[in-house]
Image (tube, rainbow, N blue to C red; front, side):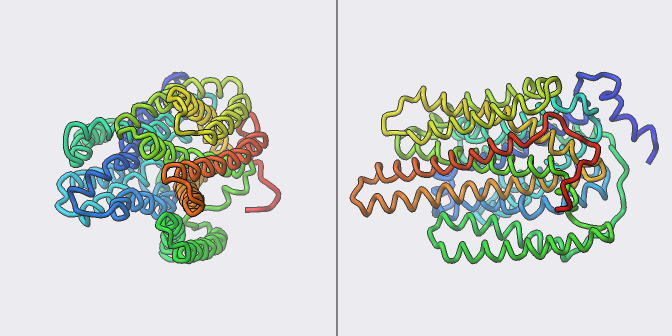
Length: 485
């Protein structure tokens, strides 16, 4: 690979601080489109049940399979991104995503649609770590907060906007439109990307350990699948699958530790020796669990308890999602100037206050109050995510960036699944207990939701504790925690 080509993406960053390199802008756009897709199906479930003659449990698989595939594929991306050029990785990610979207738009049966979602998810799984790794390589440290702010805009606003976007699209036609609208946008972004994208870094040839691939897929996929089964109420089966998943993850970890001695791990766990990275990882995972839990509970409450339509629900949660996105770049700039603690500690407290507020939901809580609590939650998450991503990855040496971002993305998926399972299980169990005690259906569901929000509020205490442990700035001098990892 020629040297000038290697240097060129870094030049805009180096010569013009305050400007986001074009490569990052392209990757952010592409990531926004592919992540939007993760939550776009939520509102379409009733339509799909009618059109494809399937039950709600079956329809739910369109979202579950997406998450499962992400959890199974992301662990491989750390190795994949080191081995191929930026353009190859981008072509693979967007090619898979486009093929999946096109197939989904014309899917004649549920099975084909499910297959299409899995292909889409495989592309999405490559995209997120690719964006993070490239960012850490081309953006100078002084500018990372601002650029990461733009990135977190894509990563956080996309799932928040998914239900709103699909609510609007579904007003105009069938569920196929969801894919038909995304396809040309994704195609244009792919074409622009291939025209402008240059390779960053030098690919390293390394062999792949297939045993690690299988145990990672079985472990992380099994864990996410097992957790998703708690919703069905068959707790014994779900617990068994989770146990198998955890066992496979344990085998995977042991395998990686032995491969590290030969410097050929699929997922390099030496990243966990960096204390700041590990603290950031824990904080991000718990915050994600709390966020996804509330993202699932709030629409359920608004639609099932308060009787709003999918579109009205989407519009009510839209201001929070937009506030989160618009604040991303500002948060990033503040981070570059003042460091992380100024943002992360108030953000963590805001998350807790919002969740405590949600524990007070009633049959008649004013909508403006719900909107305010949701906006507070989203703004607080915006204040925490950007600094946490930047501090965490900044604490890892450059040769471990791709592994650091792939571990971060894997845990994000697992945390999302744990959050969802926890919320649904707690809610169903509590609602069941209240029903047996003679409460009406609506009051039983409401009681279940309140308890689930209480669990979220308790989780947010962990976010505050970890926020206090984070440093103000990333220390890249190789700070290593005492011998663990």
